[in-house]
Image 1 (cartoon, rainbow, N blue to C red):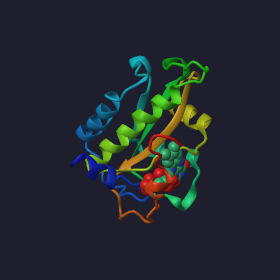
Image 2 (tube, rainbow, N blue to C red):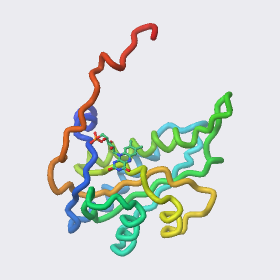
Image 3 (cartoon, rainbow, N blue to C red):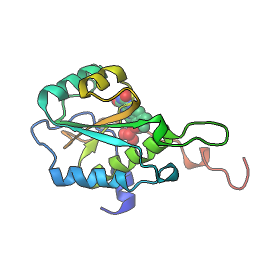
Length: 172
Ligand SMILES: Cc1cc2nc3c(=O)[nH]c(=O)nc-3n(C[C@H](O)[C@H](O)[C@H](O)COP(=O)(O)O)c2cc1C
């Protein structure tokens, strides 16, 4: 799929065909896209857990707790990073959420290119997710996504601002 088509096609999907598991090869390609992302001093701190076991998938939905907004999905990708596996800028601001965001978005775009649906989920019980997946204390789970074949086209349009509302040429 051509780059701008991928950008255009990526939407947040909340309804999946639970019976169709994504191919292992596609999952590896998706993680590889995240692996190639730029990170602070090339520290590559983001790690991923692939969850396909049905009962664990169920537990993850429970820890997300967003109810009927989603149906089920065959699997999840959970991303996490330790604060010390990235840097900080001159103001002392930590960059691990930035590294995470770049990697996870590359992952999501690659999933789109593979014809798969995702939805970045940022609202969940982090402690519960860490407990379910036995993720050590030092890591932060900053995002997760269901992965699967969308059941139906995107349910709403999620309109965007006009480019004129965002762009500044030369000065504010
Ligand atoms: C950091 C982040 C966190 C998000 N968390 C959630 C979430 O917890 N639940 C949800 O349904 N969608 C979540 N979304 C999806 C956004 O609502 C969605 O990207 C936005 O409405 C634009 O729609 P689109 O992705 O279909 O273009 C999140 C997206 C981002 C980038």
